[in-house]
Image (cartoon, rainbow, N blue to C red):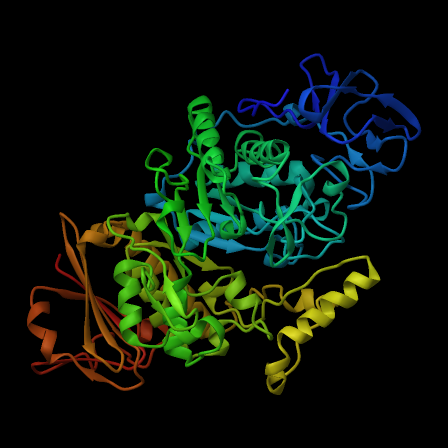
Length: 614
């Protein structure tokens, strides 16, 4: 034992080709481990090297329930459970991953170059709040033009309502969403229509309720403290069992669920000073799996350190992730257009920082950060634009606000279109947060459904304390209240409200341009030029490729701006998009009205112009 198995799952319960059940659990400090089935039949496991316990038996079938019993005491669910139909404290359901019928598909995955991501939360995306509910909207998503959906975590959590980051069974798929078969049905349906699936996974902490990992072994260490408590044990004593647990989980999603990419939550909270960092080992194992499956498997990190070592190749002593989220693109835009300067927004606000992020992804790339009171980040240098994912909204930037307001509650309609255009104009991978594309007004709040009364009290008090200084603007919603969850569901009312249908068509148009225009499709950061036309808030961005050149002018001011200074450079271009056009619900009936006036070119306030030399 103790070998990462790339080609098959080894932890938990797995069925052999002869349909015998093979149990494997890591419990290095236990003196005795038994499998409890039906419900009081006890089957003794055999101890192997490194603290692993194994049992092969013909006494359990798919659909049966079981626990592990340690040292003749309490019974616990399987740490590598695939299904918890009775909740986080109930028995584990035996699942045979080999029985699912996959299509004979030619789907090979998706490249970074082709990613246009749509982030969604299963429980609030559709009225049903299930994987089937997502499947029912695939035609809509296909028409929108996105190429991948990113699903917030589905690992089993307490109750039926949760963001997903309180999951406690990283191998088990939330039962109320549709369980493991429901997720695989969704993946298969997405691939049939040419949409990739990205799954958000959490390898930096576990939720508090139903977290029985410490009972089985030293999954956590007091060596480091992170916002959720003790860090996951990636470099302390007995770390080998922990590393195998999470690496095999990632391989399972790729291999057995045919997920195309994993979004790794908060990789900066993965504390590891080993000579071989956990993420490097993970990347190497995923590469081995790619060679076996002949499918593309991508690793995307959420990281707030502005450190390119996360996306540098393992061969260059990097961690080998394929791409990472770029929060600073969002922060620079958000602070500039809303005027907010609290917390991390304190470092932003200047239009020059928007320009910096458009060109260099990171704003702080070795420069002094006043908010942190230290030098921060390192330069992106020659890294490709397709290694950075940018957004103007996401679940964190909306949901971690006290009132869960979306952008259209903070800025006007014309500004929303300008911000979207700015995102699509850059050389990075764009991410749309569910409902953003039609201006959803329902908030996205923080919600959960814990069972422990004391934990419910602590979470409520924690939210109130977190936002105490903002009480003049209201009070935080109760995370435990069913109404908080229901208020966060999408309304899908874009057909009834004209400006929302206009915004939806505007997003579709930008996505088509991203796919069809060679200069916009390029992720080459060498061929982008950003200049400030007006220091009060007007930028010009030029993107070039072998076949064409586009110029985008963005006016973040609320007044019309004279573009005479750049008119000559636009002589050979034609206007292909004006966000202020009536076509997109803007104030100009004709997209060219107010733009060309004799020899002058002007741009409306809160708008973006896009010119093409073809």
